[in-house]
Length: 150
Image (cartoon, rainbow, N blue to C red):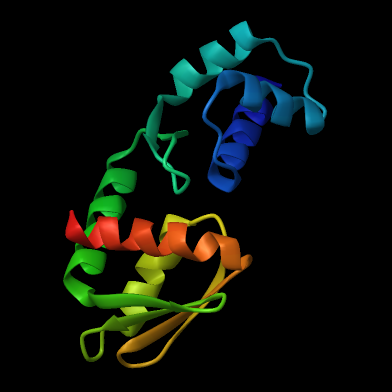
């Protein structure tokens, strides 16, 4: 049962931006697990979960692996080096990149799992990101500009 529960924890933190143990307990209960916060706390320690920046500006739980840190750093470098400008038009973000870099930058943007971005389409030097709500555009545009400025 413990291994099944821990696999469920990993699935949940990979699919949702969970920033408290209470949220994790709630999600596990939704999946049919009867757990206490003490049990979750032990599982989290065994899984070596850490807090990392989330797309909403808060923190979220993630697996503590060098793979995560390496991928995250690689994507940040791609964003910082590849993006020339970010502009909005309605509910679409238009990201200009260096020639031939759009697909790599789009993959980096997608890996961030920014809340509100429904998907990205990349050409050679331009990416179009569809944002769910027009009201989210400015926040997402600011977030991307902050990421590329360091």
